[in-house]
Image (cartoon, rainbow, N blue to C red; front, side, top):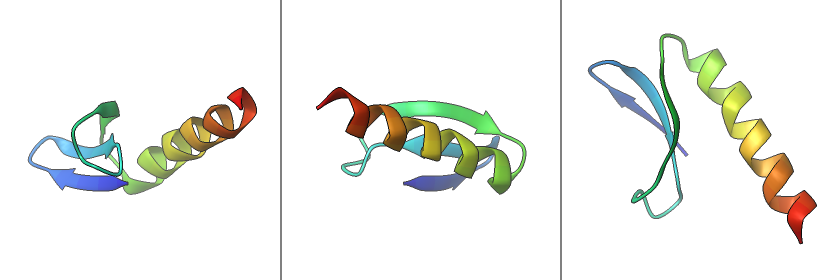
Amino acid sequence: MIKKTEGGYKVVSEKGNKNLGGPYKTKKEAEKRLQQVEYFKHKKG
């Protein structure tokens, strides 16, 4: 999930307790990182 913060956009876990990347200046960069996280999450199992 992507959250907007003062420093930009952060990618966090669904529960919101883990930072998975960021802060990014644009939402597009954050979305790209979120795709990477989802890819490896599904590749693992």
